[in-house]
Image (cartoon, rainbow, N blue to C red; front, side, top):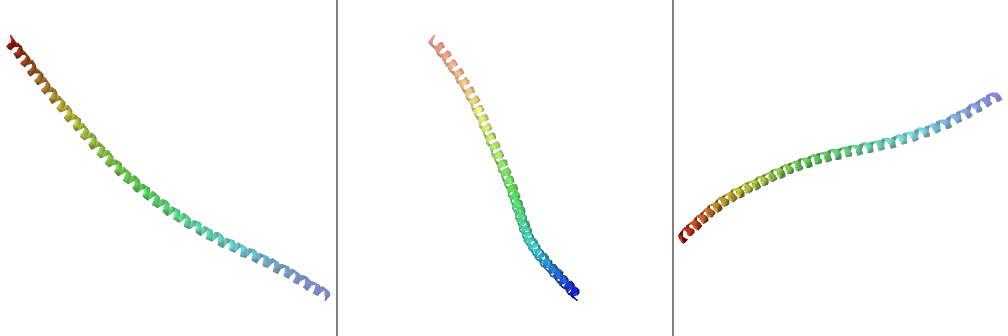
Length: 126
């Protein structure tokens, strides 16, 4: 009977050891679940940040594209205006050249008239 009681006591002690081990494993499991939950929350937060950054990047790209288009349009306008200005200046230069040629012709005509008048005056003096 003593041997049987000793066996029972030994079995109860082994059972208590197993119960303690189970409690330890349950604590480990509970800790692991808490860590998994924390990591899932962190992952969800990171997914949100990625989505926000992606949207921000798309908005920035769209804004940059609009800005480039606006600058391109503005540049075209400047090119056109400067081309028109250059054309206007060329027209002014051509007009001034024509006026200068006209004035030169007039000056030559006046010079001829003056020479003729001098000749006439020299004739009259003789």
